[in-house]
Length: 473
Ligand code: HEM
Image (cartoon, rainbow, N blue to C red; front, side, top):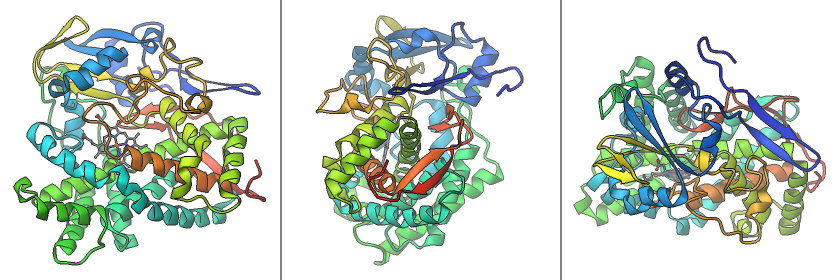
């Protein structure tokens, strides 16, 4: 699609009898000019990378006089994300500005003492040991959702939104409790969706010299969206404080922690910010993972057949449960390969707190460092057939360098919900694919674009069909 002065790169997708080159923007051969950079960033942050960027290494760019370092070599990624974490823990001004009204000092964008104090608290609440206790909610919500699919069979709908509906319902019930009620849940989901649509992926102020970027103007739509989310979250917290609410929900765990650790001084606003952060961080990511997984499987029927065979062997016709996921190795490999090709958070921008040096290049205080799972997950010198969908690369206990494959980030800021998100994605995939064949509209090529998260541009039109026998391909 041409956008006036800017034309997005063509999308490459290829398939053969036993291979699928998953869709991606064609790498550029010439450097984009300033107008293309500015307009390109508004369209997608992953569309204009040069051919050479898809190799491991270190690249230095200048945008309006600002230095931007693209750090794409495992040992340098380790330096930024682990060794010098304290200097590079800070998110980019664009990300902080975009999310601060909704999340306040919530973990995703906090730093320094606040982050240090709150990280163990949030990490404990979404820790892998708690995943089994949330498993039943994941199963029940997905099975109820599948009933809706049975009614929609044969009718086209948009998959990203459908997956977001599913994962938002799961996270709403786990964060806020199972008795949240459908209208309150819908209010939070609608508020988040409307907020995400209204945020910008580029803060020009930073590149014009303001280290903190420009504050963002909040129009009535965004203000309404924030109010919709905050009012529900605050009500849930106040209900819990008054002795009501669902015990075992994440809000309930946060409140119990507050009682045990008064030194953390968690007031209602802090609780609200952390609950909203977990909700935001925990549903869109899993939803886009599932969307891309279904797209790739529909284009790689030989993988889909292995997945169905495995589910049949492990579950023998019954619906998969959370207890099965350790045995669902193909399902897990599909999710990992999807996260490699389509990391939901494809760019991890960091801002230097102090002057530093990365790979011999001096970094000034306030400079931006870009760590890009999108690039290193596709580095042609690190991955064989880097653009192909090949889940088998993650089978048989394959060991992958954590500085080459890190869809959940790496280092102290690694996603605390990693096990939750991964288990949820495997379980939802297994339950839905066992029962339904999901097919994108004939001839439709999904174009990956990124504003905050990586999604198919314009969504993914699909139809679903119920399988006659559960194990049929
Ligand atoms: C497939 C699913 C998911 C993916 C790919 C993912 C990815 C990520 C990434 C890359 C980050 C780091 C961002 C950065 O440093 O700039 C992150 C942070 C975070 N994620 Fe996830 N996430 C997923 C699911 C979840 C879930 C289910 C939860 C909660 C239940 C969650 C909660 C968080 C939180 C609270 C942070 C902020 C951590 C911090 O800054 O210390 N995520 N996630």
